[in-house]
Length: 611
Image 1 (tube, rainbow, N blue to C red):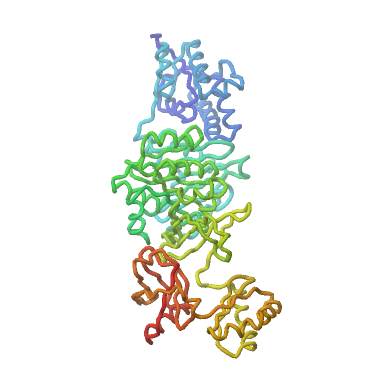
Image 2: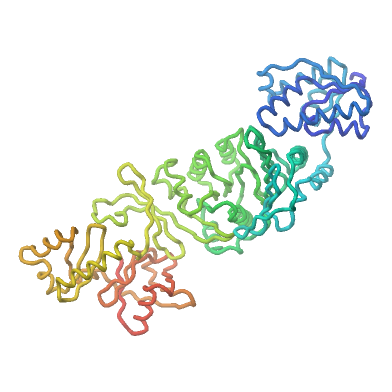
């Protein structure tokens, strides 16, 4: 091995993390000559021109190094060949590192690096090397001294810093946050630049630090439980730093529907989507779900970009491999997880990967930004075949205010969509049902070349139908001097129910009376007797339970999941679906609940029809 020279050649890694300057300051290398390779300068320039934080950090460090050398009267020179664009583009393949080693060899200098691969290759070629890997305790100490942390306290969920503005912080808990100023002094651009350098330096050395993205003036860094986004021109119009962290640690029992979620996740591999607006607590919930799954004996892994979920050390956290989640999925299948947490799904490719993994039999919990639960399912439309959606997503959990507010079942059936009358319009329909009540909330189906997503309001008429009912009742009461009932079937069709002996009166001789009514009203009219309406009735018994807020009807097990109608004295008072638990829960303040409760108290016969 060559005798160690008093010349030192630093590579890019130790310039970026500032260790060369520190070694000089701490007098851990001899006072000799520092030779900076032009290849290092070219690589840092290229990174900075692309808006990468490491490039800015490295160029600023070169200025700091020169000042330190002048202070210590140490000679500093820039030498070596400047690489061309193709060589800079191939830096990740080792081209720049090779040029740095060649310069050290030519100059008879000692190579300084914190890259173990670089050090190993240099030593194999007989070059003297100083491998200056950061110690874990030093990295931890640097983390604790981050200037950014001065803006955090125990209640702080996120800090928002922008050049020449007063710092702000969101404090509280998911769903109950307030944006508050932190101090009264504006933060300068220079201070934010210093913060950014510290963040990148610590992320490069800390064991739980990762630079998740660094391109075009935007950088995302994960430091422990801190997720930090750095923006600078040209990406943004000013330097900005946003740092977020979880403020609460929950378990699944803390949430509404916890028993349901535990049952669903335990019984089989499910396709679950957790939806909610930003800051409502989606990630906090999936962290609790991941811990429940782990403790239940499942193998759990995550797919994240960035990796910011705070999960057990037993859960492997994967990011996009070579920039593609599809590549991560390929590796994931080889590791055979029972459940995978996909946080967060935004791009088309993310939903396609989710669908592919789900069809491969992997249990999945995906996280989606959505203000309404149905929006998260709609994201799959056009990305996968419509009929495949229930096989990919069978459960939707909507989070709001830090709690699970809604759980929906997603199922495929063949039927005539709600609002269509003709039987020949039957088609595959995706039903989205409220799990708690079993009520149909949305239908998704194709109509012509369009995909329709239709909200279904249980037993609540369109406002225009309610008005039309009053007008029609008034008009028809002048035509008929006997009892009748009116049912609006659609915007252009109604049904009139009368006693058997009054049907001919409504029709008129040769149907002239009903034809005249149809012409005058501009509606198609069906004439039926009262018995026709309840011909499918089944006198199924049900029990009634009252709480302070709800009227709960428990039905025969044979009616679970069935659509039913409730009739009293020949009139329908309610339509809905019996839940999988065999019950329907009504708010006691509704008209339907009051009628049913009053009828039961007065001994009025209540008839149930299904099918």
